[in-house]
Image (cartoon, rainbow, N blue to C red; front, side, top):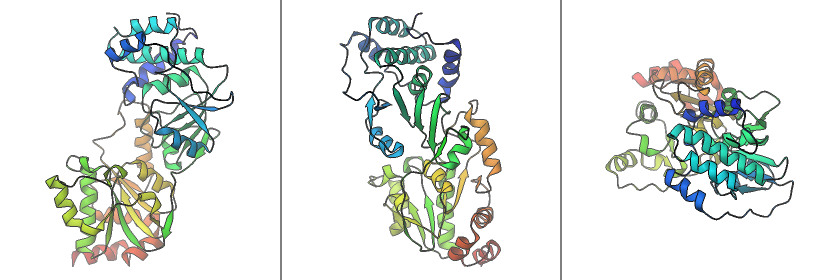
Length: 361
C-alpha cells in the first residue's frame, strides 16, 4: 500500500500494540466508513499558518484545550478532513479487514490523508487522547502539545510537551524535558476542617468494590466518630435522576451531606479526603491537600497487558497515599496521617490510634 507519507513498519507495529490499550478506534463503524468514502469532501476552518490545531472529533474539548495550553486553538477532525482519491481507495479496502486491522490501517490512512491536506510542519495538539486515531496522528506528525486528564492510556511518544498533573506524570513516563505539570482548575474556598469523599459516577456504585468502600468509610466516620462527612458527586451526577430505588436510599441516608458543587472549586486547605482511581483523585494527590486514593487490585480501567499497567502497579506500591480498598479503615487513617498529620489532627482531633479507640467505644 502507498499511503502518501509511507508509514514505517515500526509505526504500524506500535499502533497494532496500542489498539487493545485504547478505548476505541475513533473510526466510524464499517457502514459509516463506507459512507465516508462516498461522501463529498468537507471544508477546513480558516486559520492562520501558525495556529495551534487540535485534532479531535469532540467539539467539547476545544475550550478545555485552550485553557490547558493557554493559547487559542482550532479544532479539526481527521475523520471529516477532505479525502483525496488515494485515501478513498485505501479506506474502501480497509473496510473489509477484521476489526483490529481495520482500526490500525484505517486510522493510519486518515492520519496520512490529514498530513497531505495540511501545510508542512503544522502545530498539532491533542487533548486527553483515548482513541487510536490521535495516536495514529501522532505517528504522522510531531505533536507539539498533549494533555492527559488521567494516566489510563499510553503516552504519546512523538510529543514535544506533555501536560498532566504530577501524579499522572509519575505513571505516564514522559521524560523531564517533555513534562509540564498542570492541574485542572481549582479553588480553595475555606480552611474549615472537613472529611470528604469523592465518588466516581453513581451508576457504578452497585458493581464497584472501591466505590462501596468509600461509602462505607463515610458511614464509619459519621456513625462511629460522629463527624460530619461531605460526599462529592461526579460532575455528570450533579443533576442525577433520583427515581432509582438504590439512589433514593443513598440520598435519603446521606441527605445534606451530599454536595453538588464543582468538586475542585470547593476545596478546603484543611480537608482530609478519599477517592478511587479517578481523574479528580490524581489531581488531589498533586495538590497541597491531605488525600488518599484507594484501588481494587482485581479491576482496572488500564489493560493489564498494556504498557501503562507495569508503571501503574509500581506506582501504587511506591506511594504511601495509595492503598487497596479492602485494607482496614485503620490503615486508611494511618495513610492519611502520614500524608498530613496537621490536617488529620485538625479534622479527627487525635492520632490514628486515638481515633480507632474512639470508634470502638
